[in-house]
Image (cartoon, rainbow, N blue to C red; front, top):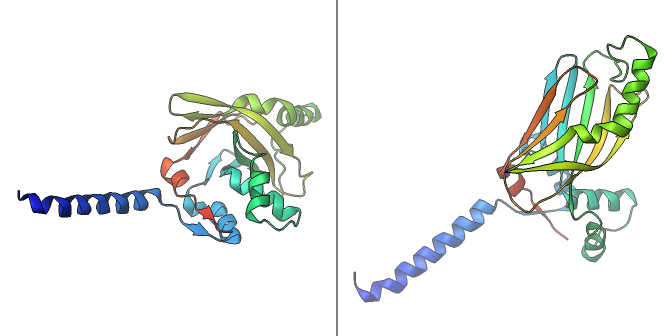
Amino acid sequence: MKADNIPLILIAVLSLSIITFLGCSGQKRVSQEEYITWVNNAENGLVQEQVVGDYKFSFQYLPAEYMALKELMASEIMPTKPVFDSVLNNYRGLQYGVMKIGALIEGGDVLKQSITSEAEYFERIQYYTTIVPRDIFIVKGNDTLNCAMHHFERTFSISSFNTIMLGFENNSDSNDQIVVYDDQVLGTGKISFFISREALSNIPLIEF
């Protein structure tokens, strides 16, 4: 190989490396509204659903940036970059998700579905308001990440599904995530939701 060809080869290799890096990162910048829409779009891989028995389960991974942006939008505060970064700091350290459990029977209530007594109804309320965090966790690589916080939103039969907001312990690796719900009251057994590494790496950046 001629020595005078070496610089050209190096430039070509570096250019290819940069293109590959940018292509693999999958991140693009989008507006705040587009970001919310992207995270909520099931086609992007952050929303997973399963039907088991008489119930429909879904889990949606919620980036910390999504949580901060939704808080600002709800408070009608202009989400400028400095304000956004300040709120985002409150969400760092955990990773978030929302699990929804719905009854397939039209007009059904998860808390009342297939119960045999009023006592069983109140046992389900007690379970979802206090006990369920011990039965939801994330398997990520060699780590098991426990549920660190939760909030159960009752719908009082207004809706056919109930919502559980979740916060999990976090680690810095970028592996696939398997969210496991080991049900104790509905008779469905363990349910798993797969959130791929690719879906996580493709989450866009927010344009300010």
